[in-house]
Length: 522
Image (cartoon, rainbow, N blue to C red; front, side, top):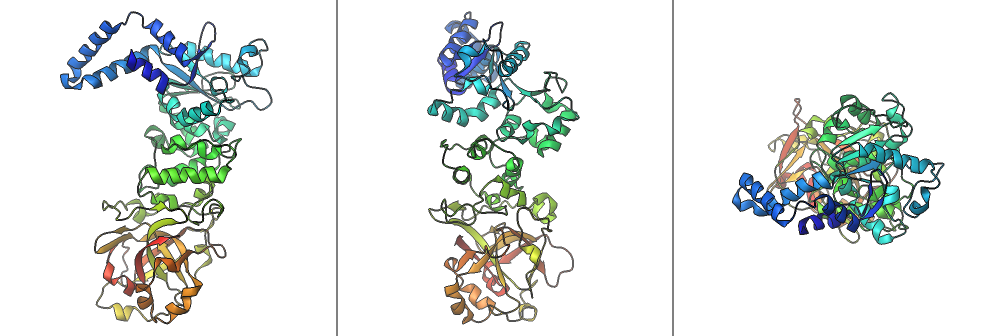
């Protein structure tokens, strides 16, 4: 029974409720004893026999795997639990851990909700326990609260079923307007459970069948209310998703318009979504908590360039001096939807990145393809904010098609002249040993030169001369005027009329085209 004990104490919620006929609140040790009592006919001999039978199916070399599968089978049969997803009552108190001993004498709306939940769960023969956040977490214990918040995603994922109570909903027709879809914590309570059932305000089922994640009409409502497609819902796994398909920015957008009572919960409620863990420190502030979430994501996953796919207000300089770190999920409302651009949608190079992005103590380290933009005037739409309705494509940078005609195609440009008035740092490119590959549409950040270096670079003459001498210490993120970190720009061959979605350029020829690859600390 060691495996069973380990499962109960390490993977199941700290407390669970029995579902009938009397509702009891059980600690883990009591849950374990409850399960053992139900499994009283399964002693060590019976357990070994079950393992032997399982081995005969999976092979003799897989004994440890067979034992684990037997434990999983027993847990599903005797230790299944349901979780509840809901929004807290606004005008009446909920049943909490501290009020549990006396609440049954008062019979308020909070207890009625708990009771109805347990009645629904009791009808499921495969479920023995129930879990509800209001009563099963002792919020007066900081260590318990920390464990509960960090484990919440896993508890919802491992539950036999999630019962979701929509207090503002009468039918599928008004389900999308329910307050439940606006709260921060309910995002993971939507994506984590493998099986979910929705109930309206009178505890009537809204869907049909065993699992509402397979109910077409319910899925339409979910997508309309949350922006999460049925495919994203069914295939969801914690992490940053496809690094080429904008997985991180897409998930941040899901959370962007949701609210939490405590500001820090905006970040804490996303830990399970991104598969990371940070300590709980209420009082640190929403921005610092979000910074630590971003930091944890960059530590856990390599090459998450999509963390730069945002536009808006950067993190406070009191938290970190880099201007490339977003201040909240709302910044990602200004992200570039990769699926809208053919050259980005199909941009999935298999070449590994030569240098990963990451945070240093004072700066954000990122490998950039720095491009000198030459046009008489940078159009205003280039300066994009997170609430901007301006088009994503705003300007073109000219790149010569062949090296033989390079001198004819390129006039001489000088720093500060009409034709060179900005530097853009593209981050969605791939670097090989001798070449650079990049799509037609580049995503990047607006850059500016250190004022102390301007005169020196002017003395170098043409763009292709000073670009070759450009150093990472020369660059800053340009936050002047309306520039908001993210720009989208198009790279176009001068002599090519047909659209070319992807380019390959020799590193030694980059300065001649007004480009350079370097590691920037911004």
